[in-house]
Length: 317
Image 1 (cartoon, rainbow, N blue to C red):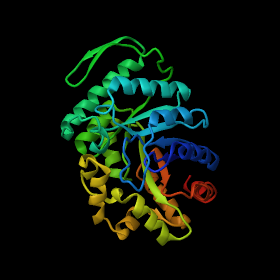
Image 2 (tube, rainbow, N blue to C red):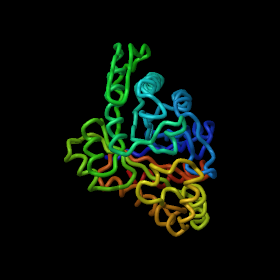
Image 3 (cartoon, one colour):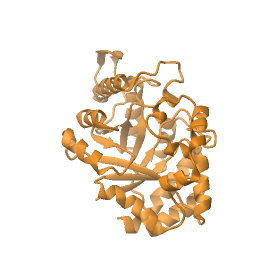
Image 4 (cartoon, helix red, strand yellow):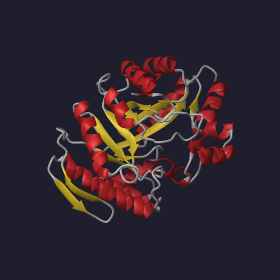
């Protein structure tokens, strides 16, 4: 059975708002939380970018729900040894309810310290090595590692996780799906793509969990909700690899001048139609997803959570 969680958007909301959303999500009947890990928002209209590990620490004190990063890039902006320490502490604080979602990242977030942005095949190799380093460190022993991309010297996590930290790998396309199946404890993708789920499982993923997510814009007026989604999240309609290679919010704003409200109306479920929201969730369940995370675009938190808690989640279950 598919489990439904709430997606906390670090790009759109302040730390205090994210913590309040977590409380509301648990009360509404969502059974887990995901949170994005960004240095920049996608555009200035979103306007936020708190440090995810600080927010997770706060979340551990206000909710009992599992928390997953969707997704962290442990390869460029943060060394995998530092990411391992952050993830281990998150696991301890949440009493083992933390899951580490990882991916090859975006230039938008990873080039802030001036490091070069490699092509995908290099980033994939970096991710594989980074996951191996983190798994070693999670064991709590002293780790020395000299690999192609990373060096670790006499490193030990004294605050080591007492529970296994699942590492879920984000992937798009055949080679990436094979990598996720090989090194991950699960697979992350944001589209309800049954073929990708089948390919992951057939490539060695077996019965490992498949995790997805979608954004919606609930509101009493569908047209106004579409306008809100277009203002805040036009980047969701950009094609191809643009999301991985554009370096700044300003560049995304320039690219998004090509995105129309009609495109956003097709990309997101907007408005108050219960059937439309239920259908959007069931598309993931029908495609074989184990976990699906829903994020609300815009500020109407209390009304959104009441709507989902009372009308959508009971029908989607």
